[in-house]
Image: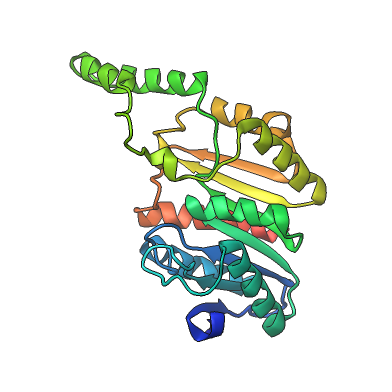
Length: 259
């Protein structure tokens, strides 16, 4: 059964799925991205939480204040919200170490929290930071060659069309460090012992189209034993297909078993 935990003086709440059997003494916190509720897209977080709980992990799901239709609350920053969440989970479970993250903006927040809170020992990132470089153009060329020649002129025009001045693009809503800063931060996390599983799907083709981009993005740390990178371009951003959700969940559970 899920346990309701009040946050911010009762202004919001989250759901704690208690670990079954032998507890791992590590709790998982899943953030919601954008307009997606704490349940995750198509209840993905619910099923994942139950699978993790069966393997000994306490799992907490909640709606971040001022994200989607969640109220603002009294916290000045999302970092302070997460700090309260960690304290609340520790008070109820005794867990002092956390594995955090989620999809899209939830992955971005997980990265930021891990850098400032040493209680974070693991990161689950789905469609997080990646460098858009020459490999992206190679990916675009691959897409072009897969289409009938009659569609090439229109695709080329879309590829080359500049963004209208003054209008925000999709990338403007992501909170990423500069590429070199990202690598320095990655080195800091890995040296601290933070394990990371990072998924990249075909749902972010506007900035990621080729696995070579990940080698550039993560640099010399790409093959570090604490870093697992998955590039699954056949899967969409919100895991619409039940088979895709099962496949991603199975990979996450496999990774968590090894922590």
